[in-house]
Image (tube, rainbow, N blue to C red; front, side, top):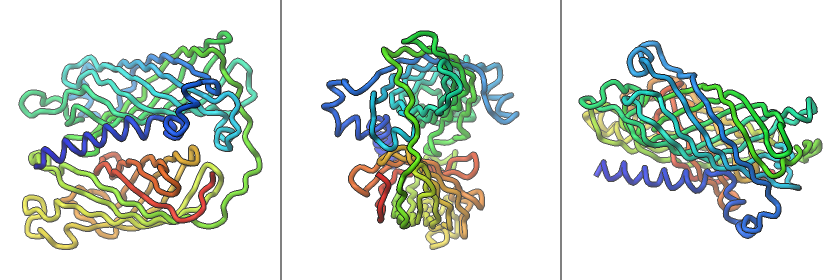
Length: 387
């Protein structure tokens, strides 16, 4: 039964990443006719080669990553609007949405040769520094595979990842030089994170900060659109009700997956069109608190299964439907045997408004650098959002 639940949640995980998070879902689906015509889009193809930058604690570097050297390659297919009248396209200087394909090697069989597919948004920095030089940042999220996971007998050297498939998180900052009308050369710095959200242990995660060089081809690079200076922000508070659920392996020596869930209540307010801030509270449930193997003589007690506390709420609005969310919270009560190892908890995720004020998304809840679990979230917002 536990194996079935793990497989089922992973299947949901893959389906969600490959549909809802690959760029701007509104453009991909509700405006499909426009995409078939392609008259209002400019496409680009980027090849990105990167290497170096393995981040790990000293003991892990000397054990799991001994003699390892990272090399990676990305192929990104992107699209921009030619002449967008959208407020958010102007705010973000006509961003590029796209799909990326990633492949890499660490030169060690103990880790594997991971690949990934991910959706991304690339946002130009508006600058008059030079007509030839451009600067931008990139945010990406997707699914990776082909890791060689930890196994006590067959692969004991891999102490960082316990699953073949993992979340892939990508950030980057880059500069581009306009070599010709259709070609740009670039260089920059990236950050990659691989994690399964404690679905399978160990899950220390893999973190990389490689340097990269790239070449981008486009039939016509559009000019960056200046930001709007006057936008009437909603003055009233927004209120959010979210419910998230997932599974977690609590003990490396116990393969059982335990159900976890989160009920969140927040209030937030626009500080500018790109950002909302607010406060709220999170209530967590952990099935492992009802298992004698985990909770011992505290099995079944309310305090063993439930925890929570107040949280600071931060939202980065990418467009009216797509946003990034984050939290910094403090436990008023927690249980260490459920994996709640710090007094503070963190959250980073993505949300998409599928219909009016109904949204769905995925988050990683963590305690500093250690993942707690992956939350699959459905939420509802009360109030007027900026469209």
